[in-house]
Image (tube, rainbow, N blue to C red; front, side, top):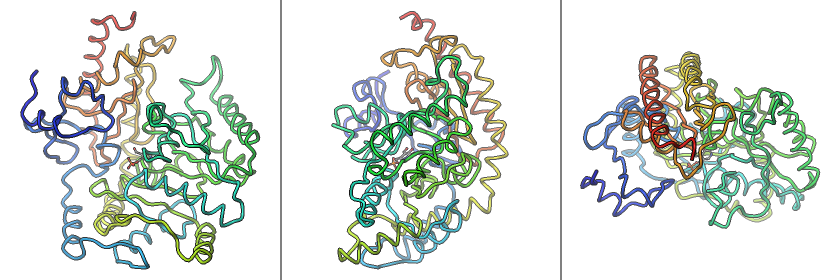
Length: 460
Ligand code: PLP
């Protein structure tokens, strides 16, 4: 199909992130115009269920008037200010207070930034600064995980354990180590139970730390449930097994709640759902229901005190972003958290989770589906060439991305992470809408199966 005028203008001017750029001109971008509830509409007025809440972030869906009003009011009152040089404003104070009160671990201070990548970059800078402050200048390495996703700035991309985020970007930078991905379906050995798999991963982590020297490792960063690596839910007991090993070596646990935070997994934070004991936390995305960019790092008192002491030695704390804690983001964040509480969004996710799980489990019989996995309202559908052997399609066959495009034809937006189809709807979705979402996904998988068979991709 020839591109429409707006599609042509788009590809002529916009460089699209995370897009196979070489095929975009043939396929054409999907240009969206508006949204309401769990639906978005393209420039032809065609309606789609947003099955990914955008990028795991628009937890309250689209067109929420309360958020629009909160933003407008703040824009009128104080459209911009910053927190540098000891300046402050009420929305930042109120949001930080609120975050302290709901955090699942002791939090003394909240340091704002704008994106998840910036928050994680800040985490690593603080870990280095902290260990200099504490007189442990050799304790600087950071452990991340294969398939972990922590963003795309230079250090955050280095933490990210996905080859395409490193290849040809000259990453990762040094001092970043990657340990195993806790995905039993893919990385469990034949016949290995989940418990044995967890024990093996814990031993591997211990070996890595001992090989490197615990005194050289500052922190481990982990998402409670891995999102952009393919919606990977660690097996039962995973964090309980690794946490004591970190404790033994005084290695902090940085909890990346950028996706899991604010109800997504059925608790305020994924750490609670998954049994993590975080030292610090990164938050973003659903913090503002994605209406305005805002992220933050939450820190316990002992880290803050060390940073404060160091700033006394140096004369300042030399870090901060122009838009970190933007008043618009903070005002919308305050309103978002109030809405989550008033509308009992956590309870809502808990109530919807069994239906979400049942619909995903039903897909396991589909000829194209190797595994489905889920937690709360976060799910993944892994497509395989051979269900019995778990053989994957070749990446060059593009089965995942093509399936996501069949989704668009079926009026559902999902995301292909390789050959895993991610599903993460707005948390305001109703039962009927959730059923409709999965009906559309089922039609999408049938279309993909018909295409895979017609193209004989299994024998390629
Ligand atoms: N951390 C996690 C767990 C994420 O999923 C993401 C983005 O998806 C990030 C960090 C990076 O966030 P941003 O894209 O806002 O930089």
